[in-house]
Amino acid sequence: MMKPHNLSILLVSGLALTAAAACGSGDGGSGGDKAAAPGAGAKVTITVGCQPPKTNPVQRDEWNEDVAAFQKLHPDITIDSKDGFPCHDVKTYDAKLAGGQMENVFYGYVGDVQTAIKAGQAADITDYVKDVATFADLDPSVMAAFTVNGRIYGLPRTTYKVGLVYNRKLFTQAGLDPDNPPKTWAELREAAKKISGLGPGYIGYGEYSAGNTGGWHFTQEIYGRGGSIVSDDGKKATFNSAEGKAVLQNLKDMRWTDNSMGTKQLYQWDDLMRLMGAGKMGMILGAPDVITELHDNRHAKYEDFGLGAFPEATATLGGGDGYLFNVKDTPEQIRAGIAWLSYYNLTPGQGQFNYERQKAKGRAVGLPDNNPWGGSASGQKLVQLRTQFSTLPAQNYKAYEDGSAALPLKLEPPNTQQLYQILDTPMSAVLTRQDADVDSLLADAEKKVDDLLARSG
Image (cartoon, rainbow, N blue to C red; front, side, top):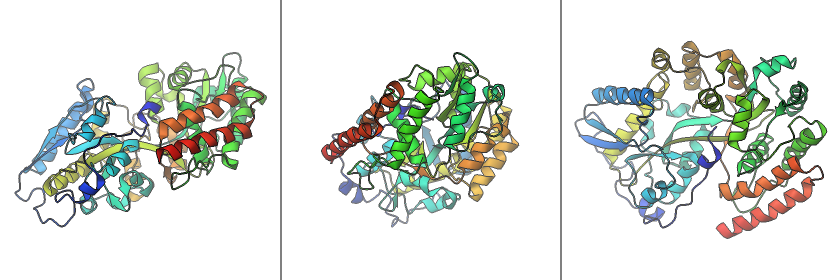
């Protein structure tokens, strides 16, 4: 799960181009142009962002291999790869966007996509996506991030759904079944009590509550319970609801009645990663990439962790990233970019999903960390290939695969980081004050968010 500072919807100021100007562009993807398709003789070069950096030589080599293979299939297309690592640099991203300096095919996290589209910096590719063979199978809730008023402006690269990351070793020690993680909040609460009962220093369940991470996870949990943060028109707060109260009351009960969340609170990203990596914390909400973080940076073993679906969820906070097309692109460049993204990002068994190659190169294969097609035929093919070439204990993640495939994604609310900062307060209050009043906390936060939304228009 991406760190919260990567989840922000960044405000773009001083943009030179407006949405109206974008709509008037003669080469931004109107679909009426009859230019030759890639491979039909028209030479075209496209710049493509987010090439893996030199510090990640294995993935960079794979990218370069695929560029060479793609250009052999499409001799009239030249891919000019741009290593701008990190792919989203807050110090330069807004300026490049405002100045129209993005690549022909440029990277964007889902939180940035709508901003770029509404600012008129992304080309409308609606009439070109038919050339992506798996497009019809893409999860509509994934594509929602790239769509405005029924028009499509980008395609996904990665996507994630939040689930339950848990320590299988602690489950076994506590007498719990590591192959059957909690499916409801009541089951999670009981499991947390048993893990905490292992002795001093053990924490059954961990939660964020500071540095905007509390508001981030409040949003995840209220989405899971079927609630929302703001109204559909983005004008009013909607979290002061039965679902919002249930989130806070459950955490308060776990903290003060069950004593299953430890005594120290105000945790941020690194705190929970450290405790999970040390084998002292039983469960947290998180996406599959949390396990990669625990292995790569916390020296934990893959086999010690499992993934379950988000408890009794009706939806989950979605994240990920993708590519948009510069509004200045010609139709030939858009078609070339579509062909490349179809080849590298959106074909099971190929490009980023070439699990056979990843296994041969010693990369970890098997985490259910990216499936933009959900439970469709393409999604099922992806899961089959990932299982076939898995180097990890795939059974440890089966509960997540089974419970998350059809779960719809919900996008983050507007004014994301400002809103999360406000929602940190009720989250931290119920975890640090035994006398915290859930109703008044939500009412106070509601007023502040309504004021924020009114100021932002």
